[in-house]
View 1 (tube, rainbow, N blue to C red):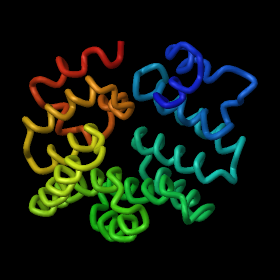
View 2 (view 1 turned 90 degrees about the vertical axis):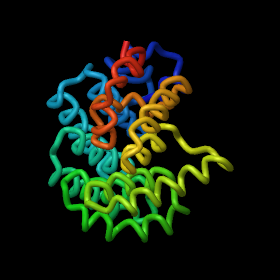
View 3 (view 1 turned 180 degrees about the vertical axis):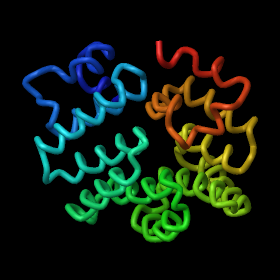
View 4 (view 1 turned 45 degrees about the vertical axis):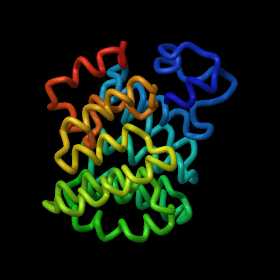
Length: 228
């Protein structure tokens, strides 16, 4: 959502309510999915509205792996885990080279509580993506949920080391720090994500990866300006 608000000359509130300016349709490039996710995570859409938007997006473009993966993501936020996994599987079948579809399949199993299955998928996704930070962040969270704190700490260490040499999203650094039980570092990264306007922070109120971060005493103060 944040990427498209920056790309299109429109008011962010209008984007959430009505989508991008015409004639570009909501189905194009999965923008309906971007709008549904952004609107749902900021409270502009109800769960039912977001799910309905994604059903329409799939009907408009059933052969798009991107739309399928975005639908899986929205279904995951909505707590529809079997449907989320099924849609991720469909998206991955449409395009086995799609990072987002592959990532959503791992993410879907993790959010559904099938941590073993998510961890089984991780090595292949890490290899295919060059150890992408989205995979590392999700993996650190999954290791923590699976009761493997040493492995979660190792992922956090890798991300922190790489952050000295290359860009690492503070959103994902917050996830990894929280997974390694460093709560002060986690809220520090969350604060940095807000200050640096990391577009992923817009999901912070609802995304399971930030469940632990939201329990920090400083959380509301840190993010108070994000959803105004």
